[in-house]
Structures are given as C-alpha cells and as structure tokens.
Image (cartoon, rainbow, N blue to C red; front, side, top):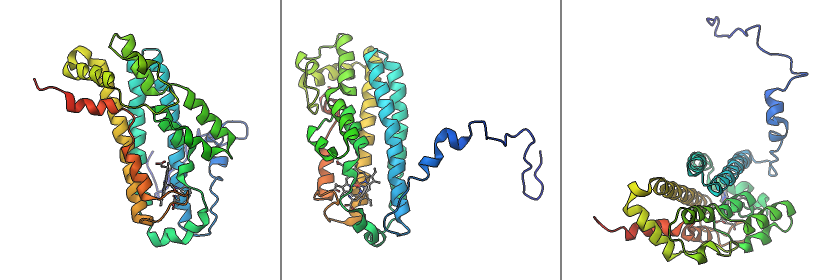
Length: 283
Ligand code: HEM
Ligand SMILES: N[C@@H](CC(=O)c1ccccc1NC=O)C(=O)O
C-alpha cells in the first residue's frame, strides 16, 4: 500500500474496539505505570530524574527475575540454560550503564534547584539494587535497617539474606562435577558476604590451565567475570555522575558521598575468578 499525502491509510482489519478485548495499555498496566511520576519541586528537570530512576528500577526488576532463574538452573545442573540467563542480564547491565549519559545532561545548577526537595531519600534505599547484590553473594545484613519503614522490602531482603547466592550455587555445581571445593565453602554461613577462598581459586586455576577439558565451566567462569565487570562499570559511572553533579557534597542519604561510593568499587562478588588471573602458569 503506497502512502499518499504522507498519511498512512489504516487497513480496515485493524482492531479498533477494545471495549471487550485486551489492549496494549491494559496488558501493560500503562495507566498505573504512566501515572507514577510525581515531581515534588515543580522544576522542569525533575521529570528526567524520576524517569531515569524508574526505568533503572524496572530493569533491576528484570535482573532480579533473571538471577533467580539462573540460580534455579544452576541448582538443576543446567549450566547452558543458566548461561542464557546471564547473557540476557549482561545486555540489561549495558543498557543501565549506557543510560547514565542521559542523566549526565543534568547540570549541577539544574540539580541544585530541586535537590533540597529530595529530603533524605537516596538510591541507597533501593531495595532492588541491594537484592541484586545479595543474589550475587555480597550479603550485608546491616543494609536491612534502612528498610524498617518498608516491611515488604525488608522481608524480601531478609529472605534473600538466608538463601544461597548465584555464586554459592555455581560452587555447588563445581562440587557435584567432582572439583575439589573445600567443605567450609559448601557449608558457609550464607548470611555473610562471600570472601576469598584459596581452594576455590585453585579449582579455577585447574580450569583455566586446561580450558578444553573443562569447557562449559570455563565458559561459565568468564560469563560471571563479565557480570561483575558490568556491575563495576555501572558503579563507576554512578560515581562519575555524582562527582560531576554534586562534587564532594555529602549524600542526601547521609553518607560522605563520592568517597562512600568509591569504596563500593572495592567490593567484589567473585574474587577467586579475578585472583586466578595472577596464578595462571605460562605454558
Ligand atoms: C544526579 C544523580 C545522582 C546523584 C547525585 C546520586 C548520588 C548518590 C549518593 C551521594 C549516594 C550515596 C548515598 C547517600 O548518602 O545518598 C548514592 C547512592 C546510590 N545511588 Fe545515587 N545518585 C544519582 C543517581 C542515581 C541513579 C539514577 C540511580 C539508579 C537507580 C542511583 C542509585 C543509587 C544506589 C543504588 C545507591 C547505593 C550505592 C551503594 O550502596 O554503594 N543513583 N547516590
Ligand atoms: N543521593 C543523592 C540524591 C539522589 O540521587 C536520589 C534521591 C532520591 C532518589 C534517588 C536518588 N538517586 C541516587 O542516589 C544526592 O545526594 O544528591
């Protein structure tokens, strides 16, 4: 069908009556989604700030959903299906990191006009962000305090704190495959952050020294490194955005600000997978 006067004719078969049928908007809950933006300052740029956070939270919701799926597939020893989930998460992470450039168009002067209206609210109170950290194995029970006024969020984090992480389950796959994973690691207190384990690093050295003999594990290890890399890139872009927007001011959430965020770059999910790089012996 050709276009006349730069106007497209609507084909007669196109559905028009949604009084009894599910429509695009009703399926997606757009009524709710698009009425959830409530600027408090009256400043033009606050809409950007709100939407940047809301889209990030939506993607975090999917990351959590996929991480739970990955954990289940690892429990079922289905490494290939687990890797499919990680591949998707990696794309979401790239999108989340890329999105910082939109917020970087907010100048310090513009932000200063409505920052005071944000009160004590801060991304530090993002329970989904914390849930992702927990699911990857960086548990921190002290984080739960912040959610005392939000019982649903606190319960979700309390439950995740008690559960095994994606990394715990990957380590169990290694054990079931016959790799020499230490018993202390298999019986570790999952409420604590995972910390460096020498025997696990030695298992990875075996894998990395003979990739062909350990192919799917080797591949999974590299996928996990990608995941941590991407997570750190997001943190770093957040730090840079914070520095260019509020400099060295304290955070609305009460922290020292940039210094506190920089210290998050020292956190690690899969320390043995980085340490093994130093240990690989030359052939
Ligand atoms: C101009 C933009 C932003 C500024 C100036 C900013 C600033 C800060 C600061 C200073 C903190 C430290 C906690 C505090 O004392 O408040 C923080 C934490 C945090 N922010 Fe932002 N932020 C910005 C945008 C965002 C966006 C778009 C997200 C996306 C969800 C986000 C998510 C977080 C998270 C998850 C934390 C906790 C990080 C951690 O525990 O290491 N922030 N932010
Ligand atoms: N912590 C930021 C405020 C902020 O960025 C923020 C405020 C409310 C909801 C989300 C936020 N984003 C990230 O921290 C600041 O100190 O300016």
